[in-house]
Image (cartoon, rainbow, N blue to C red):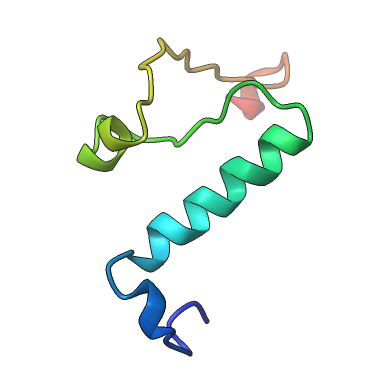
Length: 68
């Protein structure tokens, strides 16, 4: 629904930039210190001065053969 309207004062900003900005603002107000933008090193993350972090992949299964 983010493309359902247009405000000409914000034509230079993309809807994603506006949404990210509002989310970051709200998260800071809530006291959060980090935000995970997920995936890889997309170009927009450099613009937001994101710092890459090492992630882990965990697989969890019940301790019986049929769950694996």
